Image (cartoon, rainbow, N blue to C red; front, top):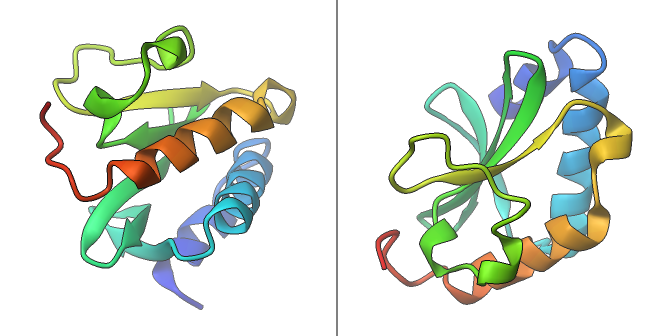
Length: 120
């Protein structure tokens, strides 16, 4: 088993189910994303470029996006920066919190900016 998948499977519920569902949505939306294990987290890459990561933190699952500086302002109400300079993330405490349309839209937009610097 790959380390990224092992990380997801060792999480307690409800986080394991949330992460497995996010993995499914991400890989269905953009099958060219490759799941790797970097910085002790499941991270999605296109080639050598990191795109997003999935992390269980505190009482939520975080889906962090490095290219957040390039995302449309319409996503600002969904994304959390919490004193981070580059990364913004979506946070989920339950499966019901996940809005597929928002996640898919952000993933597609991030893909458009994959060749740009993390900084704007």
